[in-house]
Image (cartoon, rainbow, N blue to C red; front, top):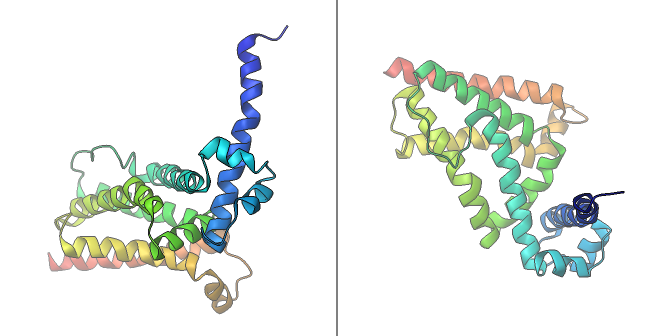
Length: 228
């Protein structure tokens, strides 16, 4: 005889699967077509769910957009956490320059591996780009959840690696350039593949991007060291 707690799990799983499918469908369609250009009927069809399940799980289309933003926060926090730890937690104590530099290189490699090579990153970046063009409360969730704390943590590492103040204008801009060079390989993906003669950007191609971006970081750090 099946125990009651097990029955609850069996009843809950389909609902969780439907919720996850709706979030994935919204992420894809909002990124591709925009929020206003996407109907709840299209989202339900993409998720193979009943249209009423959107209101049931999220209260409506706006709630679904917020859930998609929260999914992005959770996903990127997981990726960033592999190299930087919990970016929402207080920064760890001062590291020696060599250890801080090693963490910067590790973060850059993780960033390339996800942003450049992961198929899921394409839908996330499309969604975020639309939010950056026409900011809503969803962008606030993403900014507060990952953009600001991850950038701040990288700036703190930069200070530990170079001695330059974490919140100086120069440090913040430098960190943006490190991130930006990686993001280009996603938003300019088609142009990169054509110019490089690549049919796809997978693990092998991502490794080549890591080599170049790491070389750029190494050159910047060497320049800072020579000036110091």
